[in-house]
Image 1 (cartoon, helix red, strand yellow):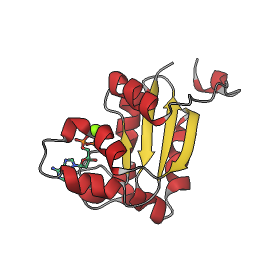
Image 2 (cartoon, rainbow, N blue to C red; image 1 turned 135 degrees about the vertical axis):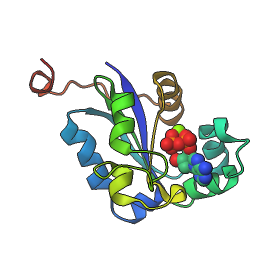
Image 3 (tube, helix red, strand yellow; image 1 turned 180 degrees about the vertical axis):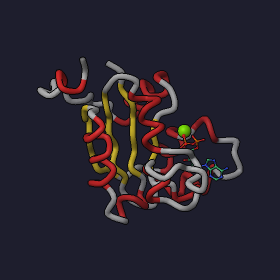
Length: 148
Ligand code: DAT
Ligand code: MG
C-alpha cells in the first residue's frame, strides 16, 4: 500500500487546525501510520526543502517552517500521494479549489498551512527523514469497508 508524508505547518498548528486537517485524511479512508508534534531546526528544514534551495523564497520558506512546532504524519492508502495532493489543494491558496485544505483555510502562498509529498519517491525519502525511528505497524479493521 502506498504511503505519503504530510506535515501540518506552524501556522496551522497555531491556528488550531490540526484536528480539522487530520479529520480530512481520516474521513477519506486513509490510514494514519505516523503522527508527532515536533520543532525542526534550520538545517533539518533546509534538508527537507533541499530541491528549492536555489529559489528566491527559500530562506523565507525555511524561516516559516522553523517558526513553531509542526505535525509530521504518514498516511497510507491506494494512490495516497496524488489523492493527498488533491485533498491539500494547489500550492498557492489563491488558486486552491474550495473544498481543499488550502482552499478552505489559507490565503497566501507563504502561509499555505500544509505540506504533502509530490511523488512516491519523495514520500519514501521524506518518511525516512522525518520518521527515522520507523512508523507504526497496524492494520485498520475498517479496510474491507473502504476497499472492494
Ligand atoms: P507544494 O508545497 O505545493 O509541494 P512546492 O514544493 O513547489 O509546493 O513549494 C514548497 C513550498 O514553498 C510551498 O508550499 C510554498 C513555498 N513556495 C512555493 N512557490 C513559491 C513562490 N513562488 N513564492 C513563495 N513561496 C513559494
Ligand atoms: Mg512540494
